[in-house]
Length: 92
View 1: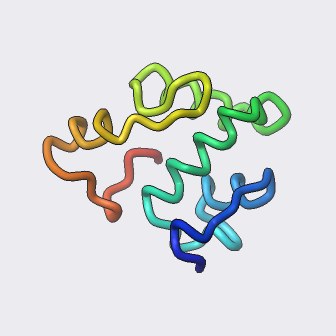
View 2: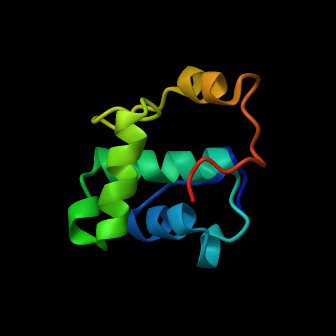
């Protein structure tokens, strides 16, 4: 698995990391959030299974990612009540 800063997302990698499958197997939570942000930014959910759209909407409604695909790491930290933990999953 690539280091977080080494991952350059495209639709295939974003889906793999968001789902935690294939090349995304073992992805950190930060990598998964970055993948979801990519899906949101590029408006890819509408071409994927409904689950992707629902998850994107949930991330936006909870303030973790905005509609432009910008991630609110502070919001994620606040959700956990402490420093963001890569081992905890916010997306099920």
